[in-house]
Amino acid sequence: MSETHSAREAGHPGPADDGAGRATRGAGSAAGGTGSHPRHGLDDVIHAPVRLSIMAALSVTDKAEFRFLRDTIEVSDSLLSKHVITLEEAGYVSVEKAFVGKRPRTWLAITDEGRQAFHDYVSVLRRLTEGSPQ
Amino acid sequence: MKDELTPEDALRRIDEVGRRTRRPARLAGLLYVIVGVGTIVYWPVMFLGPGWSRNTAAAAWLVLTVLFVGYLGGMRVQDPEVAWANKATGPVTISYVALVLSVFVFGAFLRPDDPGVAWSAALIALSVCASVPIFYAAWRVLRVER
Image (cartoon, rainbow over all chains, first blue to last red; front, top):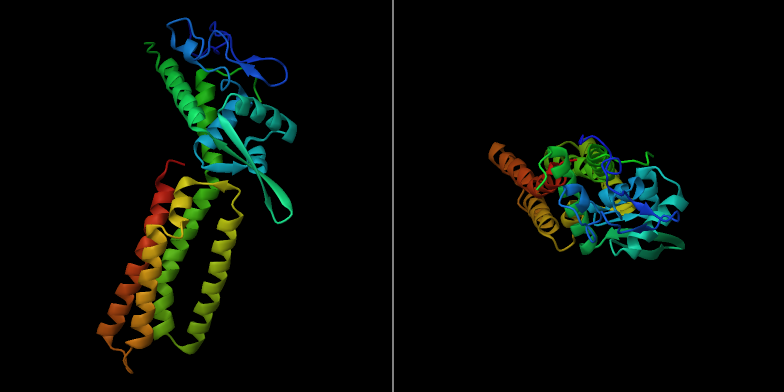
């Protein structure tokens, strides 16, 4: 199998998205992996372009403001909200709303669980790209 | 945005998003460098320079302070290294304030009527010392792979 194939093409079920942006931890996820190939360790909650970008951004910060994140990963408010809810439900991201003067600000931060999941996800990606399944 | 992600795509995206997310912190790091250089220049100019240069230095310092505080206060992302460097009770803030105060005391109260080379050199050396915490903060912020 070519390592340049997408995870889905490679037999990985990919992000099981219910259409509302809610990912489920499918058979290929860290939670429910059944095979020994590293791709089975890919977390479906993270392995989707927008959610991956959110996690990548939050992993290098203490916290980020919603609009900053929107501008950084170049998505619409609604799409970002949808995926943030998914990550929040998975326990990977925490959302804090605060007011600066009269202006509401929404801050997002990665949780410890999210950081660990992201770290594991990146480790799996590295194993996949190095072509040394363990 | 592509729907399918290869592992290579995913790693590339992680790097790219990480770099973009750290851009404001990188700018903060450069501001630290400017403040560090400003610290070295400011005090010798204030205590050794002619009147016009003192006024210029004071105005420049004021502008730099407003820019620095305004930029850091308006950051929409909280970088761990910038937050560490800016902590009011952190080592950078405390050592910088202490060293700047010592330069001020040296320049304001221990200045001879006709400052010689030795006193001027000591003032410059103290100013350089005062900038060290700021340069250390800049190094901490900028060293992270951006």
